[in-house]
Length: 295
Image (cartoon, rainbow, N blue to C red; front, side):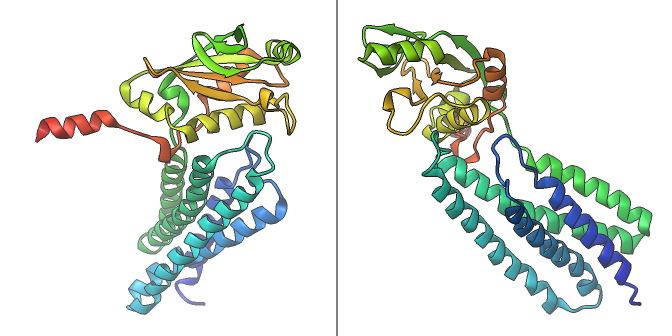
């Protein structure tokens, strides 16, 4: 057997195991189905193989083999397109849609995790060849730790304070605290809203957070996650029962109105705090001011 056989097998196994670990079905229920998971595990296996063979190729001066990594990059971009197209189609049938910003974030995550697998396999094989199996195991632990850190992004609770406010009506206008949500004229609908509705105010902790939660995609992600986790009291064709998030133009606070089937205030607050801070929604105007001051 070749001297590279065991290092390659070790790198492929660890890389594939890392992809399986990162392929978790959570409260967002994606990916859920077995065949969807098989696709991602298979792509993770391919990524692990590419990352593993890179080291033996370099040692044997077979530099043309490294060009396969560029081919892999184009293939994994197709993974992002596949996820984006799939979720966009499914989003049309959601009672509370994810929104395009949330979908793009999920698609980017699926692509980037294949690159993390390549990095993990590369490091494991390198550790095995430079030292021994113990070196490979240490490299695997370090790589998995780094991959875990990189795959987890920020949470909304880090940038806002969440406070509960009972929804109220002022005439036909629905309000959460002093933030206007929408107009509901039918008394029957108003009773349903007061019975099932819950309101929350998101107070930004700084100016950058104010700009981030103003993003419509970030607000839609909040509504989707809460409705997914706690259920939603609505059906198609009931516009008065749509969860909404509106912004206070004076201070940047965001009022969130939801209609959950499970009316648990503390659980809803925890869910809102754990909503991912979408990469495409993050804004840092303070950084711009610092750059201008430095100039």
